[in-house]
Length: 456
Ligand code: FAD
Image 1 (cartoon, rainbow, N blue to C red):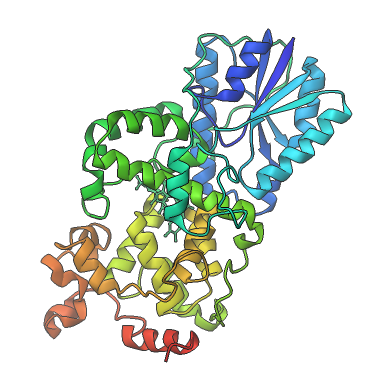
Image 2 (image 1 turned 90 degrees about the horizontal axis):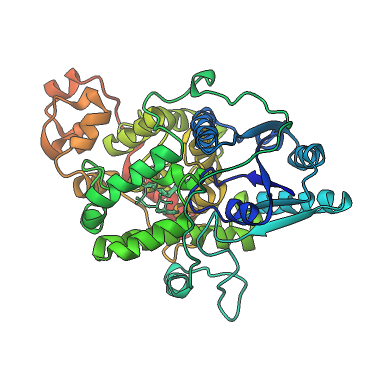
């Protein structure tokens, strides 16, 4: 017998329930990845993610070849391509990870119908993309948790499945046509400092993190210059690391750092379960706060300064430049730059979310949109009117100014925390720096925000 294993957001061989089940029940398997045309049509195929994906596909193909198999790569409509491969190889079953986003669940339904019409079966596996499937834990009075802490308490009590090793051998039937696996170099417009993709890189990164970062995570995760977070988000996004395996390994390691890290992994799943229950929140306010945002056209120069990292606020600019250079940004930077756009400039959160999705290598609809809504005060934050002050945040998260000087070299002559307030420098020093004046006074931004929100 032959079974197809359809890879989606789970580009790995370790701890892969669909692969494990297919190998247990079929003599030969077809490891398949379909480059989904719908993702390109939706404008979601940003260069940084395409480049990282190319690394992932190459590595997956190499891992399969080491085990006697290969990856079959197709492009087009997922349901059509899967049905075509199943019929070319005589496969009677297709295994895949359960979809956790609205789009993935829709794709799964279409695929099920198309396969069943051909007399084939779709077998969907939980615990692949998230440790706990959205909708598994719910409060008594609602279909999802809108507050993180009670969700975390319930999530942490869920019994996770065991971890599966990578298969030793994979037998692939002769025949199914495959496109050539792309290389990162084929993609243009990629950020210079983009991390390397693929399961091997992901596993190495996690091993290094467990040895050198995890124990100090609780203390270091907000220190921007120390770069004390795992940077595993792109591997979680593409599934080159398994969330179930990560949770097990961290719990085995134990300690305050591991506990704090597992809690953070749960934030990812919290946002998934919110968006699974309220799919329209990807583009509409989750909670209707009276917000007549300024549009991009209303604030064209300010939005452009924000995108370019030239707002005149060093912490905002450093973070925005890190995003452009690496396709990644520290969580504290994301919070601060999102607060600055939506609250200080009072620009529609969707303008910022779009820019992030154009650059982030971990850019992901549930986590990006729901975090933007969190900071815009239209989402699940219980303090929707908090405004982050870039000077106060800078002095707290980057007390010596090292992070700012790393990303805003024009400010490198300024030492210590004075770098967070260049407007306070003596005129002659200020004039020597090729660094812009603030696009808006913070007090002015705050007054506009408070008035718009009816807080005056
Ligand atoms: P670590 O601190 O090492 O955390 C470990 C993992 O936990 C992360 O890899 C991530 O999977 C998860 N995690 C941590 N914090 C959060 C959080 N607040 N929400 C959801 N998951 C979290 N994360 C994305 O994966 N994709 C996005 O598109 C995305 N967009 C964001 C937009 C905004 C405006 C904000 C404020 C946050 C966004 N985040 C997003 C969440 C968070 O900033 C990143 O997951 C984190 O910075 C990734 O770095 P790390 O892997 O070093 O995190």
